[in-house]
Every structure is written in structure tokens, then in C-alpha cells.
Amino acid sequence: MKPLFYFFILGAAYLMSWPSQTSAAEPATPPAASAARFSEKGKIDSVNILAGRIIVADGLFKLPSTVSIYTGSGKGGSLGMLKKGVRIAFNIAPARSEGRRVITEILVLDEK
Image (cartoon, rainbow, N blue to C red):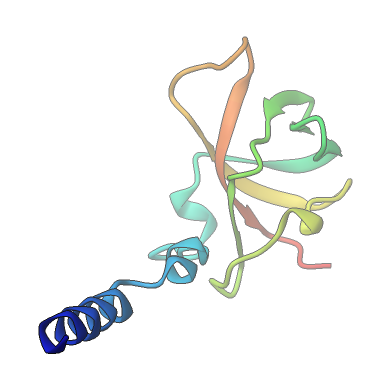
């Protein structure tokens, strides 16, 4: 009985030391929350989060739900910050998906 008990205790201790899944889901903070590290800039003309698309400076881009969004203060932002008229800086993936350019990360320049 004692070896089984010790096995259970050691197993529980091991599982408790495992990294939390919630820490991996937190948005990463960019090294420098400045527009200089983003390749594109523009004002949002239209955004449809459910359809996964955004129009910035008359260009159509794919907007995945996994896009990283940052604020000027360097903190993580949310998709809800993306509204018509908001100025953003962003990076796009090198390859095209379904004929559209895919935005990988966004810096919200106007925090409304």
C-alpha cells in the first residue's frame, strides 16, 4: 500500500510543477511597441472580425482570430479595438493565403 501511495504523491507533485496552460495563452509583448518595427501602416476602412477580413488604406487583408494585437503602451490589445477610422501599424505573413495577404500582428496607434 505504501509504494502505491508514494507513487501517487510523486505523480501529483510532478503534475503540479508542469507549466500552466494559461501562461501560454497570454499575448506576448513586443520588444519595442513602436511603429518602426511594423512594415505597414494605415487607417482601418472596414473590419469584419467574424469573416476574418480587414481593409486598411484600401487594401484587403485576411485577419485571423489568432492575430497578435498590441497597444502603444506595449500591452496586449484585443480584436474589439479594431474599428473603422483607427490608425494601425501591422506586419503581414510572407506567403499569401487564399489570394489575400494575412496580417500576423497589429499595433493600435489610436487607442479609442
